[in-house]
Length: 570
Image (cartoon, rainbow, N blue to C red; front, top):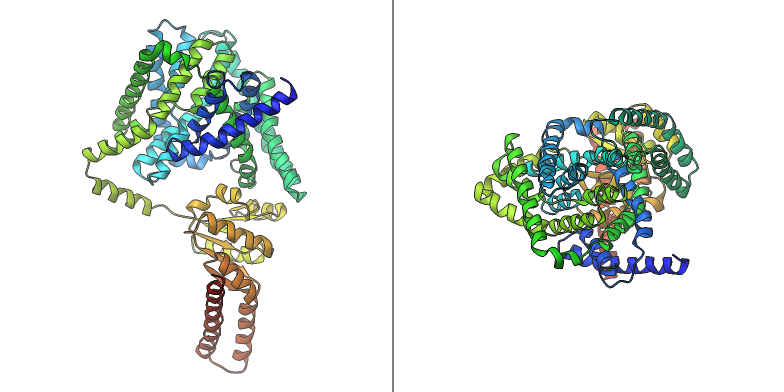
């Protein structure tokens, strides 16, 4: 492919995504189907704008690498332990039982055993993107249904790693009875070596990058960690995705994790979108004309089998009937990891190209039907159990959740705020861009992480959406104003408590979106003045009344001033 054609293809892909993805999201189908439809439209089976699909898919494979890294870095051992029964019990049962049943059915079509196993377990995986998006939009992520679905999806995310390894084993002509022991032993030794090296080298590497105080250098270091470990695993015959997953797990407890996730997300989003577009370009729509009724039967059969098995397993684990219905229909589709698994299996020769195209079409059609199935699940669950009771339980579950406070800045003021929160038993998460300060704080046992709090992606990684309060104690005034503006625009319902310099700065921050603003000059003056009054013989009650009057007049005038300026501005 020439350089000019390469640039032309990229422009075509970007233009198609810009058009298709917003339309798909507006229709409630999600961004993944937008990318798929965009790729299909410009690919060989659409308008034919792009014919060289292989080159694009090779680049797009890095999207899967970054996706596995993000999954790994969000997989904290403590999080798994809390949900261990549902994750490892129900989740494992779903993958094993559903995969085995679907693989057995695939054997009835006279497929080779290795092909049937990969197809069965690939179709058993559901769409994490679709499932979590629908649960979040409908406010059910914290309900019994939401937690159950999340547990299953989490185990499925873990299952993709051994399944990718299985593809590599089958591609090397290993049988399930011979040769696997040596391959697994070799893989384990390499994995252990990578984990040990990562444990002692990753944090020092990121510390040096952070100490340079150059955002681009830190981003480059983060990308180097992901791709470096992925490349290392690839050179010894294992999956690059497995290497990225291990890199993520090793950084899951690191105090650099939020900044790393924020820096990696743009690469992940762009390359993963390119990956899905590559998949869309490889969909053979001629198969619908050729096997129309067969495809309809396979899609319907897959949805019914997965829904039935999921419902039965949920009931066996004690999940209420109405929640079991919701989970079974919500996760009855096949997901984006099937594209990854089938794509690798096709390249490795485990699945034939023609069969791969048929499977991709079936998976895409089940994903298209997911919003309809979710609506059907809500209707059926209401018929099974009174909606008022379900809503009451959902509210009760949410109220037991504990929201954390985000403290932006761990300087002198930030440390004092954190110590007060810790003394009061309030969960918190502090962010600071000084790596040395963060290292000392974490050595002392404090929940402090490295990151630029004024960046939206860092706030997202720190869980701003689910936080109770944002406390801003930064002393860089431009960063404070930028942070308050970003937070207020994206999370307007989250209260913002801000440290300010003087009255003018207070007014500016109040207009920007601060809920409560504290003036350093005022409070310092009040404390000094109060100390002098006490030395001159005034009682504590008299001093408190006097200072409260001054404070009320100051902040009251501040509110009026902001309101007046806002009125004149209009």
